[in-house]
Image (cartoon, rainbow, N blue to C red; front, side, top):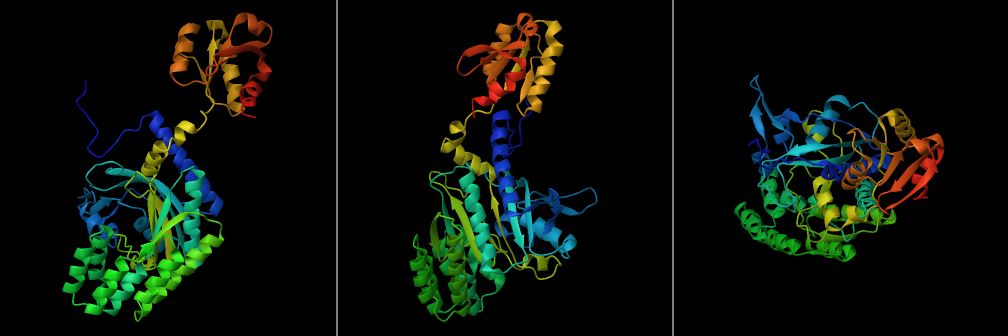
Length: 432
């Protein structure tokens, strides 16, 4: 037996697991089409400097970075947004706005493997570029809500905040942007006391420390109440007040769109990625400690990569984590098994007829497999049952003479003789 194993943190997906992943991807693509997002494909390998520019210190330390044979420092992408921003800055700046882009694929970070966290993981991405208006942020929230609904997930909630609140306070206290980002990293890990001590070390006023402490403790499910309290706390910090007003407008528009998700509004919420400038959010379900996805507004990234100033907002749902949540909630088990048909010729001289029937079923949109192992009918039926085949068409000489076949329902353990012309209708008719 071979001693070769997958590299730590990487995984093989067996057919059942791969189908679950593809199921989520299919729904994600449907949502992209419904909202008018067009697919783009970017390289897995990018220049290191591009990926390191605004990702955040923790991700920079965990990138798969190396020199290629030409001596250039490159890395496997740890997230999508930098690549999309680079693509837009270099090849799509003249396209009409807004740009609404969708992508999917694998990402790589050298994290410690644990439940819901792997070194190779999968995401889909939705990016809306060119609009700084609150309705763009509301669309991303609404799109994410629709994705959760179409996947039949239950009991999820959105944690929502605004980077402008904290950056508005710290900016007015003359804290440099790089130092602000360091504080955001601590807050992203819920290390509030360390963040306060770090802020004190940066020379902020005692009033600022009090405001920050109170802001960290301001959260709740009632958005109006939380934002009202936060606004009174940050009085005098103009940009922070403006951020709260912006978030309030975004949430009002989101509710008006019909999105009815439970939310937890946190005035002191921060995400580790350094490029966020406005509204930020993450999606959670009970019994899974990691976010199913997250996103927010980033208005300066495309400009950083040489493009024109272009406001942008996006979200990155994690496919692996969504699959975990759906498994925990029994969603895959609840879904009716898709029709899978196998055609079994009783004798070798009936193989051509069996192939004709298989082809006709496929043209009717029914997945059909031909028995290609030359097994006897009894063994072929046992194999079909073990592999999850839902229906078997047995092609026998007596039935063929009459223009018929035997159709066996593998789940009900029932069978009947049907006209060949009616096989597809019989199979599909059960779901009519």
